[in-house]
Image (cartoon, rainbow, N blue to C red; front, side):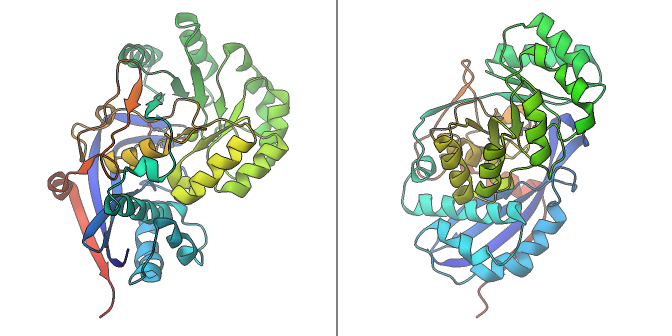
Length: 371
Ligand code: OSB
Ligand code: MG
């Protein structure tokens, strides 16, 4: 598999509904798509870095030049026998995991298409059907939130995750639990709390949550271990886990009982599998997080979620929850049982709609081997 060229495209797509977390609200997404051109086959990846450096230090405008000036030059002209061989070639660049993941995952897609094999099988997936949950952002009113939950439960989703922050937490959990005492319910703070709010966080315990995701600082593991000792509710780490060593340390310290794997935050499929395998060996369940992806990233999340230790429903949901029209064919659909059936065609099983990408595109740049 010779890497002949790499193309970056920025597309802009309005969200069907705004999405609000403890770090802010967005109405539309800027998405960086990466195409690797290898021996006549194109592989597609999505860099999940956000519009702003709020979820992570990485964002759209760091990913593009990092790929242009460092990652693409490290890869162009190289011949790989499989996608994971790109990892050591990009290692000199520190961090920038979402940029690296966008490229690595595009190479996996190319490899799967070249081998005429489904990506999920190439990754070692074993589950032909995956369980889906939804992440519901902060709303303008509690009534709106309850309406949203009602709609998602009626659609069949198996787990509801609510974004929380001080002032939008115990009050909503109370309302939700009194209406739905038995649903699988979790919450995600995106680092909205401090360790001195322990007494407040302990008040989450009676709501019988599946987990509380990332209550404390994004760059902290140790203080989560102190907090976990004092909470009955399981902590799930998202932002704090960047690679398998982080996961090993977090588990050893008792900082969490569940880990959210986002392939972008972890730096690509190879490292995501390492985190998965490590958690499996320690009996820590994992689930697949989302970053409001277009169909390209979404289809990669689906493939990853087929690995055996993805034992809890992921934030992997239908295209139409986010997009009027998604850039893949078919769109991702969720059954009335709240599952996605894995497609068995070569690659992701979804075709990239270049016509639509052309329509949403605001910039494009191709890098080739210098001749
Ligand atoms: O923390 O899981 C998160 C979206 C953007 C940034 C961070 C997060 C999220 C979500 C959305 O919760 C999950 C999805 O894509 O549905
Ligand atoms: Mg999260």
